[in-house]
Length: 305
Image (cartoon, rainbow, N blue to C red; front, top):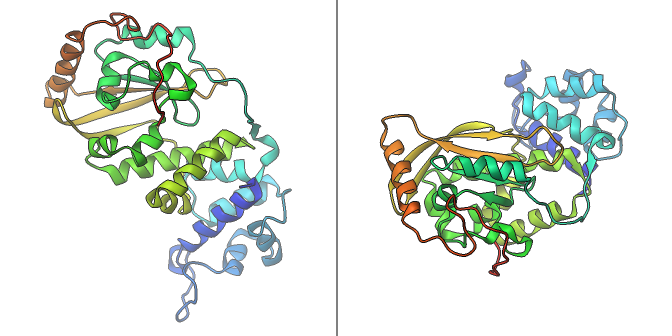
């Protein structure tokens, strides 16, 4: 989908979500379609109905920042949604991503998560693909998969695909719908920041074909920069967990993220994480793992999610 088409879709979805009373307008009678009319949104933003209609139809790509800002205010967008609107309306500023050499985690990032033996950590690429994880991170989120799978692009798991297409992962999250919405909202942000990303388009297309739930959420165009919060899990080895998560972004342009899980001291979740770490230590070290659970770089073939 082109940026202009995505812009029109985002505007239509957000306009349909607003009722006249939400923005101080009188509601006269039954409306044929939900939400504000185009002319009402245009009036609130201080632009002509013709101009706003062209934006929704993808026929205008030179909107000024003042106009975009006015539309964002009229739509009551939050900070993340406003940034997403600017990315869509100013496609020239978006970074162009095409098929390139496979992504690879930085050595320094590997050393960092290796040192966090008691804290689950997963390194994600820009499209939510797993680039690396430490042993406890692997055991927490995907212990049913080969530990070495992130090392090879052809077997590299993708957290969003796992969430929608892998039964073990679906059962891991006790608030699955919340987790799924969060994942789609993050992926929408990535789509707004990049242009012509063929791998991202392929991922969205595959998920839309294989999961009606993903397709439905994607059509709602949720947008959120999920940097911290709570995840609720039911782990097959240690039971129920309520874990804090934090996302760290390295100060480069790789788009990588380090997802870390922690538990409040003295809670059952803290005890469960400690048990996971102990269970991990009891697993024999294989030829492709070191003591911290980091793969040496060998290529283990398996079907990738």
